[in-house]
Amino acid sequence: MSEQIYIGVDLGGTAIKVGICNEEGQLLHTYEGPTEVEKGADAVVNNIERYVRLILEQSPYEWDQLAGVGAGVAGFTNVRDGIIILAPNIGLKDVHIRSILEQRLGKPVRIDNDANVAALGEAWAGAGKGVGNCVCYTLGTGVGGGIIINGAIYQGFSGMAGELGHMSVVPDLEAIQCGCGKIGCLETVSSATGVIRMAKDAVERGDRTSLSQVENIMAKDVFDAAKAGDEAAIRIVNRAAFYLGKSLAQVSAVLNPQRFIIGGGVSKAGDILFNEVRSVYAKLTPEPLQEGVDIVPAILGNDAGMIGAAGLFLH
Image (cartoon, rainbow, N blue to C red; front, side):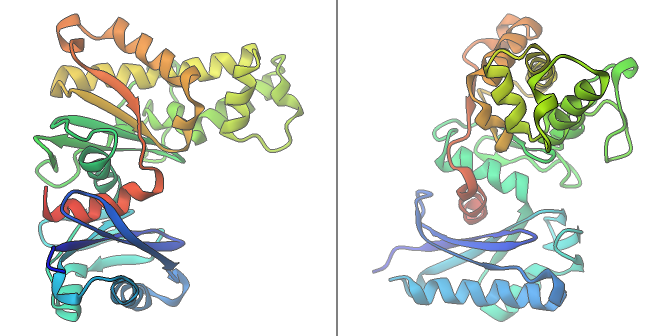
């Protein structure tokens, strides 16, 4: 067995997911173990090393076949120097993770932001396969993003490109403050958190809505109510979709990607979200910039981070 393999690490606050990929982006073997943030930074790094070794032991592949280890980190990273600047949910700060892991494993290591590697995974082996230029949104608790140009992650001069959730798209008169400290960010309306906030506001205003009967409103409840014809829920979904479509139009004017890929929990709402996003995009984007462009759901789910991290060596 002589083919080269790559290991991708998805470093999260609760779990570390590790996957072996081949050069075509096919996920061959996976392993998941606890991050153990409560034990401190050293324990987290030790676990990464341990899981990398363990997954190879469990697989039919040999250590000599491993060409490199890539890691996606939920936090701020210095990609060029391989440093985790700050990953608050993981308890890591100023950790020179690349040099530490390279010394321990004796293999090349690369790191990047988790949203970037998820975007690369979708572009390489998922909904963007065969498309050189695409932009990926992840709609979850917040709104993450990644930009793929000519098959590679676009980093920006300081590695901060792709912060799509912090595009200011909501007019000041109806904007609220985002967690980043600014107002009007896409994240405040198109994330799961934003959808839930708007639903709770509607209930508190006394709007006629079935959501008033839901004790602990989740984003899925809002989308389900909208699908059932609840007018207040439909307005919330349309508002989230409007600003998402508006941001896509703005990105098109700057980057002209061939494909927009939308993933994360909110994207599972399906047509009720996507149809409105496509409609808004068509209204706000000049026709020449729309030509040949499509807006599609992500398909790799939770595997995107592992696949994209492994792909840091090939893209």
